[in-house]
Structures are given as C-alpha cells and as structure tokens.
Image (cartoon, rainbow, N blue to C red; front, side, top):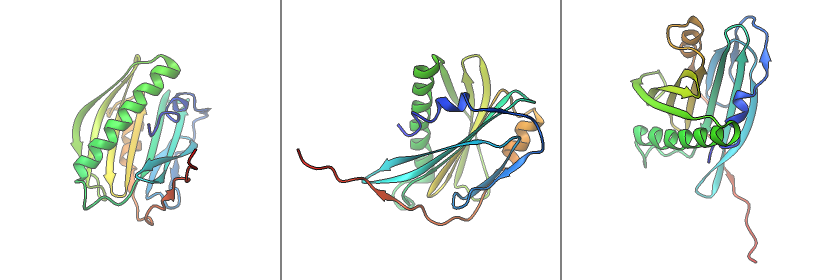
Length: 192
C-alpha cells in the first residue's frame, strides 16, 4: 500500500517549539503551504504499471497547539485522458484510507475512521474534498486534492476549522507550477 510504512511515523514525529510559521515549498513538487514548525520529511516510491513515482510525506507536531500536521504529495502518471479527476481522487483516497487505517492498527493499535464531509475547491486542483478524521480518541480534518499528475493530502489532528491554526494551515495551501513527474522503471527480475 502507498502509505503503509510512512503513516505510523507521522504520530511519532518530533515535537518542536512554537515560533513563526514557515513556508514549505519543495522544489518540483508543485505546492506550498505554511506550517507552525519545521516538518520531518520521508520519501517513498509508489508503483503504477511498470514504473515507480515519488511520494513525499511531511509531518510535524506543534507543541504550542498540541496539533499534528501532515502533508502528502503523491506523483502518478498523467492519466488525464483515462480517468476523470473524481475517479482519480476516489481511487487515491480509497488506497490512502486503507493504508492509513492498516498502518495505525498494526503499529499503534488505533482505529481510524475517515468520513467524507464535503467537496471543496482550490485554484489549480481539478477536485478537492474534505474528510472528518477520527484516530482513536483524537479528531481532525483531512483535505485531498487532485492536480493531475499529483494528488495532495493535508491533515491536521487535534483541531477543527474553528481553530485559527487549522484555518491558517488549510488556507495557505497553494498548487504551484511543477515539471512532470519522472517515472523510474521497476528493476527487472531474473527468471529462476
């Protein structure tokens, strides 16, 4: 699964002291966002057909607010002629939710519930959707966007839209111009 080994570390991300918010705008990943503290970063490759594509996970715990923030960027092949944006986002989120729930159940014994809340719009995204997140006793929000050939997931745990920090995090997200993803072929396996 795409996020199986990356999701559990999100809850174990280092806690940093509060300060000025930083702007995260990784080169070539097509987005920028503000976070209260510097995030930890993990990279993986996800398989589509016979190639792999980059997936990047950024996580941070904000000691001042007690909230966990997560940003996921997933590249995939240009599928604009094959799948509609809604189908792409639905397929991505089905895999994300399954991997997220499985990883946390296995690593932390936590139950995860992700329920669709509403469709949202964002300049540069074909479609966006907000979800209500329950992770054990913690509550939060998750937003996902399709911006072919990338999907983005923004998550905050420990707050809702009434909190200024949550609003700042979500409102600061922008989709930027970026080069197309560079697929890497799967290694050839030798016949036995």
